[in-house]
Image (cartoon, rainbow, N blue to C red):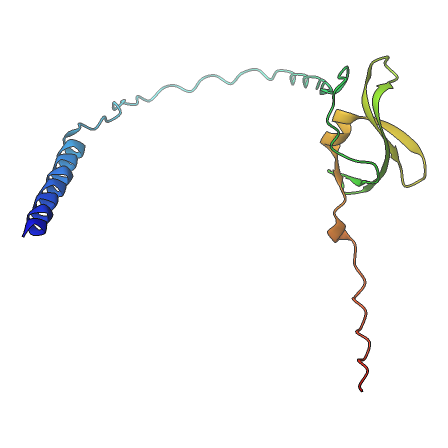
Length: 154
């Protein structure tokens, strides 16, 4: 008998909770946006043809790696890289340099990459990590597995 009383009490409490929630949600006044009456206006006179504004010069993206002594290199020696935009082969990372002196006199981490024409090019670490990607292993076709040799019978 006691469990029946608890079930009735629980059902009543749950019903009251649902009713209170419904009353609260339905009694909140809805805010409607004010209605603005539109009046016909005279069209504005056409603006005189002005010379096109010169395109703003795009500043080169500042390298985050220049001047850094502690840089976590993303690529490793032996990684084959391709250009992200074109997908064209870039080369193979052959060496990482923590303190390379660049042509502008600054120093910073750099990747030395062997290009497909067998030349070596030095790239700023941040610049290369933004513009290159590792060539996926799935891009290569793997030879089919060898056929199993016939089992010998006794």
